[in-house]
Image (cartoon, rainbow, N blue to C red; front, side, top):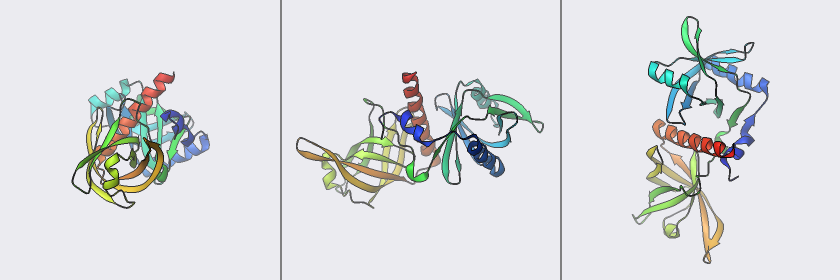
Length: 245
């Protein structure tokens, strides 16, 4: 994976206006829930697309029930919209979001995005944590000892870790499910999930000993934990984008 998370995300970008309109029209027809993250991912609201106004190049979204949170979104300088279309994760962002009226009720109005990101389930976008700000996956080995494995990439679907030296004694066989693991996400708190070992392969050596990368799938992830991972990924993406500007 490319070391720059934003660059890696670009391979999922769709620029075709016809395809963007098709996807957004489907979202309005099905009233699919859309999560809107703002204030660098610290806040979010749930909404849905009510109407795609192609003629005026705008998307009309349902207004939230919390007026204070609605105003904070309107005051935000950037918003990330995340949803699903045909079991595929779709996201787009906007720096312009206004309040409007639709069928006599208040709504959010946002310009149609010039592009969207569409990520297949089996290839969830994986973010490499920033250098010097390591994440660890804490899990219990077969001997009952606690292991802290370094996370090299993370997505809402899973994590990649570097197997610690004691990992050779911890049953890293594909298909193994390790219950009640934890990840401490900076500014988000601790999330808990069962972990299924998916694969294990050598990525190098150190002091003559092989180093292994282990692919893990996150199971039993609740909505709060899923949102925490998305906020973390979004915040790091924003930090990297600013550093490149």
